[in-house]
Image (cartoon, rainbow, N blue to C red):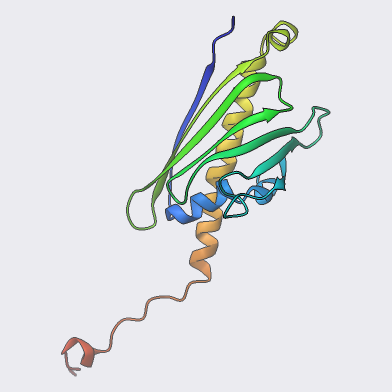
Length: 175
């Protein structure tokens, strides 16, 4: 019997938690920054991408079947989790991402995933876990870059802070 493998990633990015949250939970935009195409086949119970949402993921330029996942943990800006229900060459798969505010314009996420490949897949492709890990690492790099890109874009369109007038500070102009 094959035991579950764990895939783990911790990232610190220079964006508010809300930006990192949107990168991971706006499922249909995933294809903008990865080679994964995602579509929602059933919206979530109270939010489109939220709890109960069923999503279908496929990878561009391969002939593998799409993978169906359901969102089973949802606490906005804090916790997002899902599990695979069909289509993957695995028997179990659970992913959980925790988001942490690390100060002004800084956040961290911790992505913890466990999966078990089907025995016939491991027999046919002994390097399955290595290939999966490589794809997971690339996905994480892409997500980090997308967070930074969206954060920079947010900064570009935010008006600069205007300092208060001297009179508001109780000061006077001097010459």
